[in-house]
Length: 85
Image (cartoon, rainbow, N blue to C red):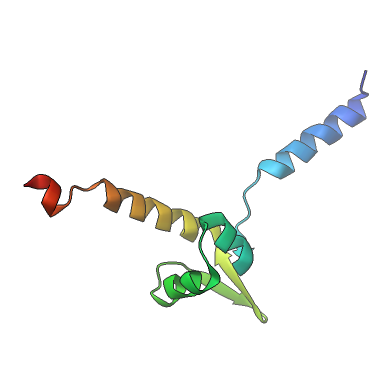
């Protein structure tokens, strides 16, 4: 039977695993969206994805990635002109 200390440690470990990061590096953001690096930089250039610079690191805001997906999802839900006719 696990001790109280072990149980607490496991609970803390699970909690740390479920906390979504505020920012992520470019390779992580690419994996998160399932896109290539150049596509990510195009979206950054169009200001569809928000970044911050910390030293020489480019950090992508996770909330910005989620917002992009939500915007694109809403746009894909709208009927096209062909579907309306």
